[in-house]
Amino acid sequence: MMGRTIFIDPGRCIGCQACVSACRECDSHRGKSMIHLDYTDEGHSVASLPTVCMHCEDPVAPCAEVCPADAILVTADGVVQQADTTRCIGCSNCVNACPFGVPKIDLQAKLQMKCNLCYDRTAYGLAPMCATVCPTGALFYGTVEELQAERPGVQVADTFVFGETEVRTGVAMVVPAERVQWPVPGGLPVVEINGKDVRR
Image 1 (cartoon, rainbow, N blue to C red):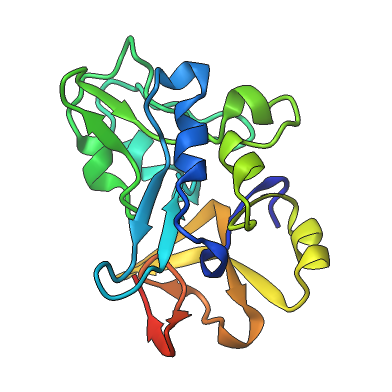
Image 2: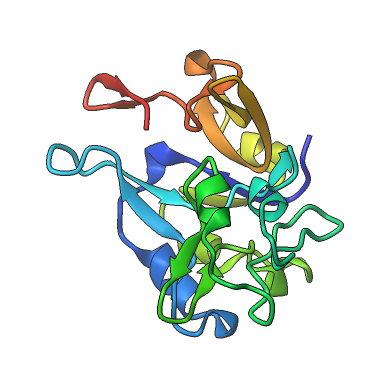
């Protein structure tokens, strides 16, 4: 299984935007947040979900594979980097290739922007900014063993199916053990919201 990484626990997210604000504070982001907060049933529920790069492992980073300028690099430890500003041409191929809808294009700057797992921090053993400020633990940084010791009864999913394509990721979703389906359909696990199953 994976080493230290981010685990997303959708059932704990309260939509406070602390992760978005913390991400914006990183020096390398120039005041822009690389994390997105999505609302699963906006207007009908307060349920929310932080969206970070899933750092796809197999196939290796579809966003990097379709980049015509080789602007998106993958580190030896599997972190999919944000586009190199000196190479990115703002073509949006990465946006269209990502099954999770993570990369965004800054049209004015003609530059792709996405989470790089705070590589300037995680490469030195520090947690990403978003995980350090999350008040509920919806973003947990550590090993799967540390997560399960803290939250008995949960499982994690790092394999997702899109049509006939299976994607294994370096970031995982927390799934209650009794609700898990393998592999997870559609990119996110089934989550119970207000008494009914919701799949984003």
